[in-house]
Length: 90
Image (cartoon, rainbow, N blue to C red):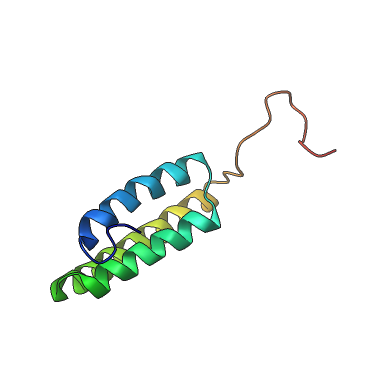
């Protein structure tokens, strides 16, 4: 990453935009790994307070996603339904 050491927070902002775009299209493991590296670089090369802020923000986002997933599962949502009425298998 170009901004890894010189500007870790702007690099994290750019990585966040690409990560959101990737999640909208369908998440991939490669993008998740790159985003994890951007988080690591921002906490390692950024200011000391940045790592504490990132920890709190990441924890809050993780709890929010877990609650949303639980609510979605409890509502009976099972994912997208094929338009032609088929089960999608076969």
